Image 1 (cartoon, helix red, strand yellow):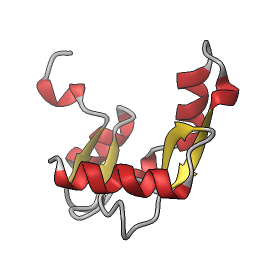
Image 2 (tube, rainbow, N blue to C red):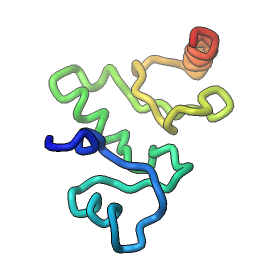
Image 3 (cartoon, one colour):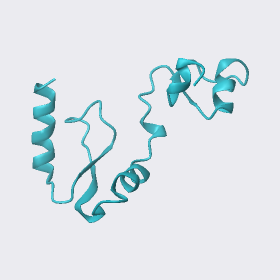
Length: 100
């Protein structure tokens, strides 16, 4: 890339008005996010799981819904082993919160 900002999949700033840098980002295929948007809306968990498991045994993995009280800053889904229980995912959440 010619500029460092071209390395990023999205930028954060004011909503697009149809002119200025945000419209240039749209022309380059870069998503423009409002200032307090965490960005999970541009992430497709099903497509990502398919991409990650294409050459692996896909039946061993699933998209597990994450409950917001446990995973406040995480996306709504995560790739997990197919046999993972809600209790196991809650244990993982507690470990990650304390381990940061």
